[in-house]
Length: 436
Image (cartoon, rainbow, N blue to C red; front, side, top):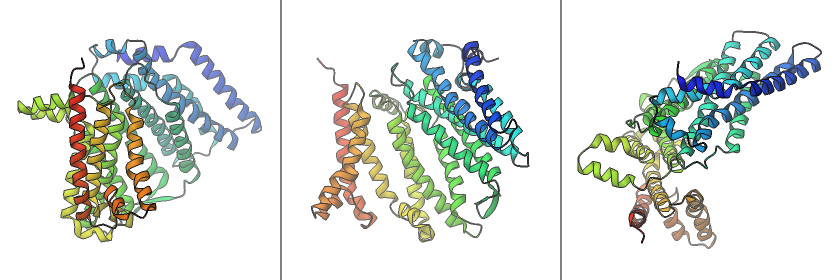
């Protein structure tokens, strides 16, 4: 058996923790049973669901992230990384062993829930949806812990992240439990909402678990090729496209819709990766060294994730140029995204270069606030001030409006991208210069 899983189970299922959690959960469920007239019913159903959210969802996410953060703060994480365990064994050992106590509590909650409802054909899918939601939340917490571990021993998963995940799980539970008769239309066909939601949540949880594995590969210095992001963007684009087109849509319209959605997802992923990953000032030097030696596989393996996402966005923008005849048939918001694909790509290039420059000038961290301040200045404050002052021409220079043609917007943005690249290069050179 996986020794990492065994170790986390022994640490997570300590008798004091099991006794205290079991006693508290049993008391809450017993109180609901008494209030319901010493029988199972609506009150015990809602109480079991709420306890599953709190104990298995929120508490389980905390235990999952703590399984790594505690090692980081106890200065044992480096020893773990040097062990013979591979990234997959390390990932699922923490993901399954860390929240083991929370899953035991969740099993009791689900048992009470099943006793409180009338069993039907969708009951199994409800359990799948709830279990997948909790697993996805645990994987999301481990992803956050792995990303924060790049920033040093002081890292911790914010409480707001766990609360937001728990709130989302509550909302999801209300949707899938209280509207079992509704259907979801996908690619022109109607599917039972509970079945569709259960399948989608299971797939999303699987993607989050796979994301934990890929981040664990980075933590253990196991090199991988950047194909996973393209696969994930493609899956999400396929999922969203099914809700936007119907069975009568032409193949060109379906491809255009999928490419547009994928472009938006790739651009969003580039920003998220730029914020999430700790900046590595030595990365450009390593990439240049690999390129000089024509080690293109090493370049692809170490290329930053935000650059990978931008590369995918570039390919999708070219594809949208080929499929441009079907843009008019898209919904308004997606049609605007398809028409402005090249300006949006230049916006992203400018912003990410500025992010790199800001991170290079802040070697001790704390650059996230400056990056967010830049976004506020570039997209809201400065254009808003010039617009209120009546200087529409200056506003279009700062933030080209959607009313401008894509060609004019690109002409305005290209010099900004060049200036951002020069600033990023200068900031990086200053960072690399030895300080006397």
